[in-house]
Image (cartoon, rainbow, N blue to C red; front, side, top):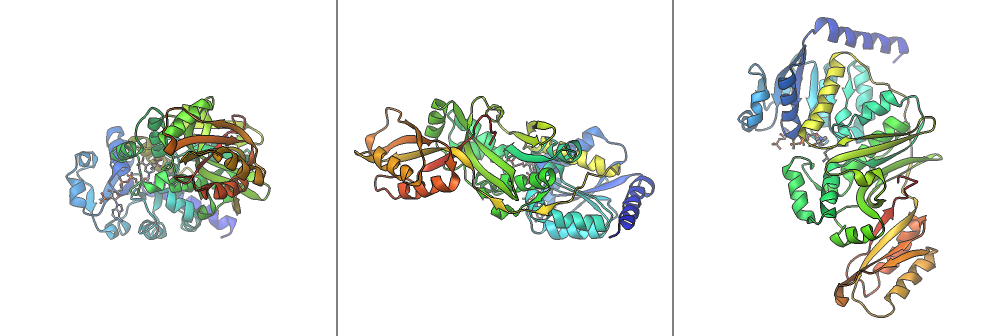
Length: 441
Ligand SMILES: NC(=O)C1=CN([C@@H]2O[C@H](COP(=O)(O)OP(=O)(O)OC[C@H]3O[C@@H](n4cnc5c(N)ncnc54)[C@H](OP(=O)(O)O)[C@@H]3O)[C@@H](O)[C@H]2O)C=CC1
Ligand SMILES: N[C@@H](CC=O)C(=O)O
């Protein structure tokens, strides 16, 4: 499309919003944790010129009878036929169902029929955001997704509008509220499965919580942030992830001895023509702001070449915090404001980091184990920094820890492969990257 045509299309979209649609009609696709909270915020705050006209959900009768239904205007249409929404005169479709299918197809139809889209769907935006944004531009409508990263923390508009003038070289931090909730409760002795169940009941977790604990949710968010902040389009499947499910209570005890705690850290940084990116539970120093993020709090540090570090922090999950981001996007669309867009290019990803590592093994104790482990590390050129062994564990199931001086991820993995094969090992060794306080991951 020519620049002139783009300008005309944008002007048309703006005039449509401002002149021919004094009331912006809004449809919700999905009336779950976030969808019902959006209805609540719209009902409680009564923003002028915004009208919720449609609510779509499968088996909609259940939703209509729910407590949250009282926030939906009496005049609104409840439907379980999405075409009622897609063929209606709504101006903005808010998608809060999640998942790739059928969301992608329905949003394409909505955009093609001239409706702007607000979504919190990180998987969809991580994988298809660039294509959907192109489609929205061609159709002269908007696609906004401020709630897709860090829930109620305005990191997406902050990076796009607030830091668009800098050259961001690194993004790192905590972007999954469920994992942070689980890890910070484990820190004070709670059990993994109990806290995961609590996170689900409180509406923080994804419908399949393995998306949270195995790192796929954070990976999608990291890719979205990389696109906006570093103008780097990454394939989410290329970003390595490590589950938090293997972190045990004993790891918090050992981490504490090292003046650290454990957080799921997401990190992406420019490394020449590549982007170094990874999502994993890591040891973070107690003095790091990441260690101070508790519960569903998220924290993102953007490091700029000209402006230095900027920190975004707040609640990254939960119905109401997320609904704040959705409603803020809706208001921006309704008022015709446009996000800063800069050219993006595809970048390859590497999972190689130079870092110290924490390796926890559980062994059936016998003489020579420490020497065998140090031998495996020495063979790949990894230097031991410390060995920790807490008293009081049975010798037939003894957990102990070795930490290394900085080495490459691939180097430590080579050593782990041979350590895992030792016949004294009762379970696969757990290896966690250690965040340097100076380095922020
Ligand atoms: N919860 C949170 O803290 C945050 C969530 N998000 C994102 O917001 C979106 C919504 O999340 P959340 O509200 O928590 O999820 P919920 O599961 O609570 O709500 C999703 C709603 O959409 C409905 N739905 C899902 N798929 C379909 C479908 N194919 N057809 C019809 N209805 C469907 C569900 O119906 P049913 O009840 O039958 O399952 C449910 O009512 C997701 O993309 C999520 O990743 C983003 C930031 C934070
Ligand atoms: N499941 C997600 C919800 C918000 O994106 C999380 O826990 O962060």
